[in-house]
Length: 247
Image 1 (cartoon, rainbow, N blue to C red):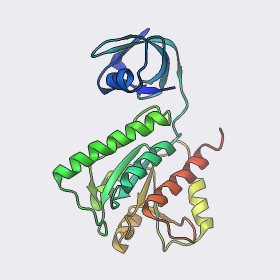
Image 2 (cartoon, helix red, strand yellow; image 1 turned 90 degrees about the vertical axis):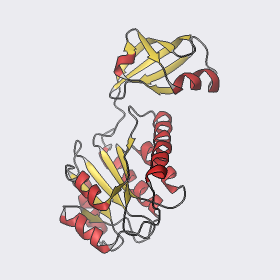
Image 3 (spheres, rainbow, N blue to C red; image 1 turned 45 degrees about the horizontal axis):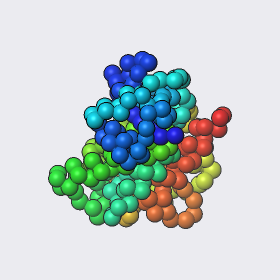
C-alpha cells in the first residue's frame, strides 16, 4: 500500500488534506481513484489508514478509516557521517541506510575525499539526496523522512556529533572482533549513535585520532577491506540487528 507523509496541520480528523507534489504523484503517476486506500504518516509516530475521498487539482482529501501508534522506527537514533564518495555512490548509500533505519545523514568533506562541491552543486546534490531519502522512506514504511544535512568538514562533523551518546568509527587498523562485539552490545535502546564512514581513501590518521579524542570508538568490520558504500550499510545492519533483537 502506498505511503505518504503530511504535516500535523494537514490532519483534520476524520480527514487528511494532501497537497504539493504528492497530488500529481497520486493522480497522474499512480493513477489512483476515489475509494482506493493509502497509509499516511504524521512524520512522528501516528499512522493512518485512509481511503481517497476527492481528488482536486491542488488538493486530495483522504478519509481516515483508523489510526494507530506504529512501532516501526529503531529504538535509537543513528546518525551517519558519510565521507563524500565518488560518482553516484551517495545515492545508493542514502537509499539503503534509510531502509535500514538511519535518522539523519551528514555528508562530510574529509581530507582524502576526492569529491569537492561548490555552493551551487551542493544545493542541487542535497535536493536530489533528500528526494532519494523521501522515496526510500515511503518504500520502507518509515514514520518520518530522514534529513540529509548540508555538507560539513570533519571538524564541523565532530562538533555536530558532540551531543550524541555513542560514536563509532570503523577503521581498517582496528583489531579485535570481540571488542567490536562488546562495544556494539553495550549500546542501549534510546541512546543516540553516530557512525563515521570514510570515503574511498579512508580517513586520514589525524581524523581518526581527532574522533577518538572526542570519545569515538574504533571498531573492525572484519578481516576484509570494505568499500565506503558497504561499510556504512554493514554497520547499520549490525546495529539494527542488535537494537531490534526483542521483536
